[in-house]
Length: 237
Image 1: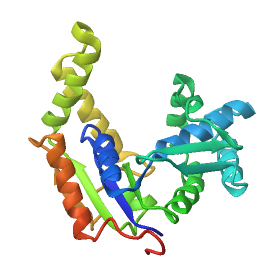
Image 2 (image 1 turned 180 degrees about the horizontal axis):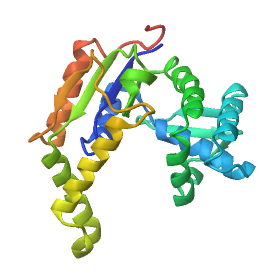
Image 3 (image 1 turned 90 degrees about the vertical axis):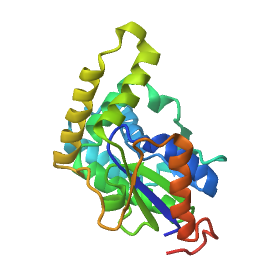
Image 4 (image 1 turned 30 degrees about the vertical axis):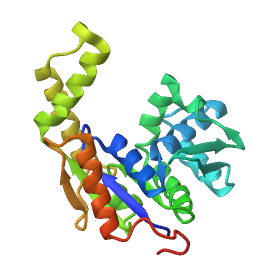
């Protein structure tokens, strides 16, 4: 496996934006695991398979991986593209219907197991930064660097509330309602049966409370460079 930076943490900790900037700074690819589940959901739609048919969706995911019909491609500037049966599906997997299906599909244990191979195969050939809930504990337990990005509940609720106000104006929910939503999401993520949110024993905790974006990125890059990243990606294991 090439060098992998695994970044886990609760919703609102800033993982997505931080992970992209870190990947760009290191010359790595941001591995978008959600795109894989979206692609399986799209394939299910095209095959006429219901998202809640766990047996059929699992068989579909296994087939796509075995035939290499689901392929990840690294793009410039840390980007990643997905091909399904040779077709680039970057736009097709972002529709609301496919997004909803991906949420259901990603909770199926067999699908998660099948897609592990695709993710690890991709990481075997290029340095990656990957963010999520179970990256350092399940997907890449031997990652070169594991970071657990978090922030206080109030801080994460404040960030979420600011986004909602900017997007919805006066229709945005109150801060109190947003904070309750964040607490509910935390409870769900930590207690779910499949791949619950958990800090890996060897992950470095980075608390972003009170830190601006640039400071968080700088801290993550400091940790990466302490592990001698970036470096020649060939044959790092």
